[in-house]
Image 1 (cartoon, rainbow, N blue to C red):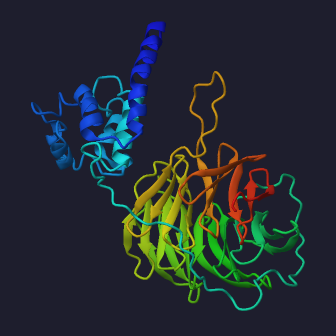
Image 2: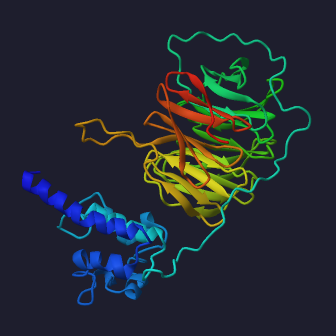
Image 3: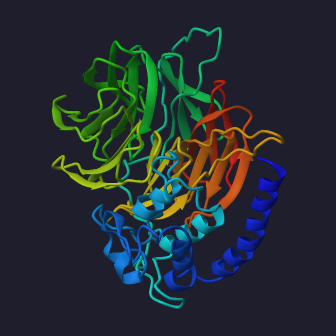
Length: 462
């Protein structure tokens, strides 16, 4: 861009920025803030004289009616609103207005804020987004009787010493005891949060342990994985004795995503087959095969009460299912990249999804509404003079017992977020963090990285 172009861009920013700031003091409205932008860029093709795609944006009433393609805006949902997707499309042939420069970023931000606030018609008007109560409400979880399950007199397993330490590709913490489980070479280590001592090692001769999950009562450990393009399965172990209880699944490829239902009667498995299987731990039979996904399954998670199952895939597809019937309940459409992690808040009201697209979303599990969306939650700082695209993906997410959230991402930070989605603390990681987990009391957390190390950190929670 030449000096004239840069100067013009600066002038536009100077003129628009105060306007955007004033608008930010109160929710933007159609009449005062959005209509002037539409008049400048859109009403030639979508106004009173011409309505391409039967869409008239010249009044709040006609905009709200939408066009032949459906609703132009969905209050509270910019990313699924056709008008917003049209003006932010990356492909020049699809972006509106056609054959013209993109709408200035400050104006796009204003339109986004207007949709998020509930598409007010006039200043002081009524938001079309209903208020909802998503405050964390502690619930009593069913726990095993007696002391919290921890390894007791496990048989000694001698592990080969690898030339190169494998990455920590799976990690989980017990919800009831100060221990965590971390993937090793064809094995899983059980480690104490208190002193970092390895309390036991579980062999996983099936191959690479891609997924580790503790049961809700902490008595059973699920390990799933296998050998790529050969076979895959999930194995259940007794945490106290280290005894192998059962195995389920007979897959033709390694399992990439798995979870154990709260009553320990069902295992959900997913992978390159694009289907999620619900398998009985008692009979080993497949109860349901969930076939809505169009790409590899990358994450699955049962709700705390076991009535729902969330499933995510490599293309950003995210669905919520009823476990008793195998019927789909909701499709949650926001992600544009692989979903790396799904985590339920302990009360079952919120589901968090995190992915390669940099989105960290908390969904209201009752109706699929995104109550908060931290876009680019792990966006790395751009080095001076660098203008390329930097990876901003989130690699894992985990809720604390009290409802706060922990995430790790490609920016090499572990971040803690409060219940409203505000960042509490960003902790730098020595290597690329792959997985994270809170301790059972929320006072500390662990991060497993690509170098094969697990790091213990104190939590920022009160």
